[in-house]
Image (cartoon, one colour):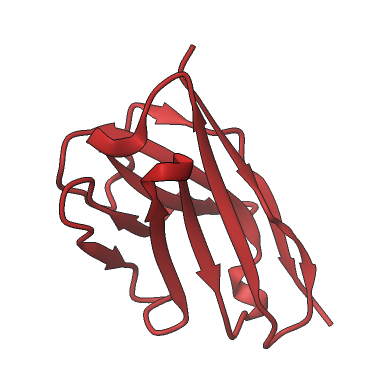
Length: 124
């Protein structure tokens, strides 16, 4: 059974950092582009970042550029999202998703497999 599991969420103060992990089971991430998305209460799901499967090309949403970094460790079948300089507006449930193929984008409809999400709360 193909599954994605996010972890690493929590409560941090503004300016702090978190690292989210997205671990795959039941399949290998080598051939999948991985995206991170987030959804805040009352808002639509937003594309945060993605990384391609083949050459590691990355994309970031405008709101997180320069603060978030996506990376993948295929040996561990895991993708990470390092989040620095966190702001209250980063508060949301963060989801990782997988799309078969090499290239990635921030359109959620390109992704077939989704994790259950992890809560990130930025508050003083």
